[in-house]
Image (spheres, helix red, strand yellow):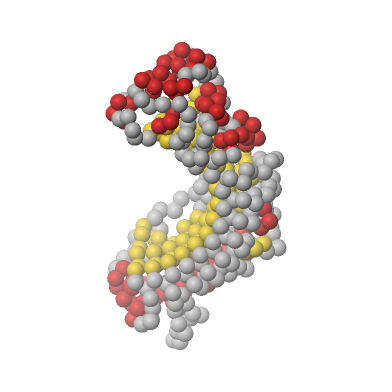
Length: 363
């Protein structure tokens, strides 16, 4: 332990990973006291420890309280001693974030073991199943969980992230959520549009060939939208999904920042991009290569022209577009400045200022 290097004042980030006897745990705690590093200085704690309880330390007032703790991560089994001191801390007003590891504590047991902690934290991360039979405390504004299997109302949440959502989330479940990141693990087709008017930011994860959530998930007020592959599998696909070009996509009229990070071809992009008419910052995949494809890309993606042969180009499709990033799946022999100049020559009123081509290998 190099506590002396931290000095007597700086807040501490502590990673407590032990498999030890009660005597050994007591000695470690005494080292913190001797080096003027009591619990009051701990700003972040990650604890992975078995349930050894050093009873001799219970009456040691010099150990202090978790009065300045901001981040708590529970990575192992029930660490009884730390739970005891967390719950006896008189003021947990600085606590911002609690994170619970896989197979550590289900939500109900967490609430039972740490009622005051759960009544203080602003953000909760559950890296396991999110089965909520009781509602979240109103102080929790941010929830991140691995799965959602049952419908639960979250009336106070502002931000929600679900890696694997197996229910059809309803607007009444999250009436105040403004930021949502989600993957819908649904095996049936949905024909009723649900509107989430509170949302301003949406990160939607989809299988690379299945964009059906964009046919029923309405979010008319989002200004940021990212479409990406699922975090748990970059190669996920649904064999029975209808062709992307045949889907009746909803329109998202206020999206200014659009990021598509799923490998779509030009025809699929042409079907999807017009649903974001107000975009000013765009990141899209480009699965063509070579200078000969330049005009095709410009006409099909950025103009109102219906065909490459047409000589009448009504206008640029995205009049607010100022920044364009093309993610190429292969080498593209095109100079960015040359490409931008061609576009601006074709559309003198274009607001496009920056064009970037990046190379990315899709899984």
